[in-house]
Amino acid sequence: MAQPDWQQLSTDVISLLKEGRRQVLAKMHQTLTVDEKTSRKDLVTNVDKGNEQFLIGGIRALDPDAQVLGEEGFGDTVTSLTGRVWIVDPIDGTMNFVKQRDHFAMMIGIYQDGVGQLGFIYDVMNDVVYAGGPAVGGVWANDRQLNAPANLALADGLMGMSAPLALHDVAHTQAIVEASSGMRVYGSAGIEIIHVLLGKTLGYISQLKPWDIAAGQILLNTLGVRVSTIDGQPLDMLSSNLVLVATEQAQRDILRIEEDDVSL
Image (cartoon, rainbow, N blue to C red; front, side):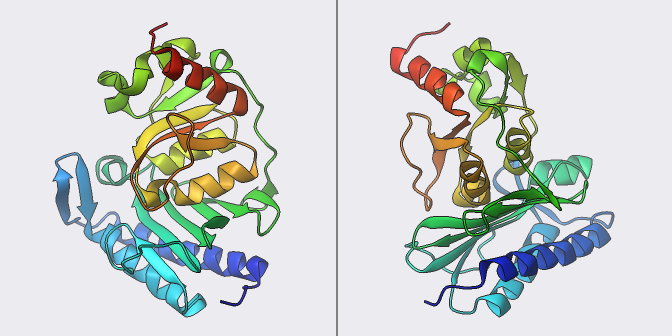
């Protein structure tokens, strides 16, 4: 598989996302068709499905030989990251989209033979695309290049967290929150990751599927933020993982809590 012009591809993907945004905004104040997937808190709408079909159609035109994994099932059955694989989340934070019409994102990650090359997280309502990766040598918020966030220890910053994990104290998340400066819950992996990229939080813990973390992992790693399982292992990008996003120092602090198996 030939290597693309990554810079041109990035430009084309941003244009595709912006058109997707235009279509989403046109539909979001209409009556939504809302269905449950696995529970009443796991929703999908006609807008999720329509946007995924639109994005995958655009991806097929840009990169016809690639595989595409989409959350809503309109892509390929992907069993390997060999070659070029695009991973798409058409609406990340669907509950926020349904209940608030805010705080949701569109996300695309592009992997070449298992290595993340380009990631895109679109904060739809604020009209900011966070884009970049090793293929283009950095991460940008629209036209502004981002610096790496400060490498803070756990005690020195806020921790993003999935509320159910903290409520049920999965993997000692309550001890992790107690050791941090406080917990923040935004209800969208994409929005959570944006806060880490900007240094507003120093980490994030949640159970995530490939489309929830594919784009974010690329952007975070490019800025030196660690992404791993909760016990510090590499992610399986085609499976669900209990994901730990953290600065290097905070990751070390969190892994110590996991290893010590104690509450602070």
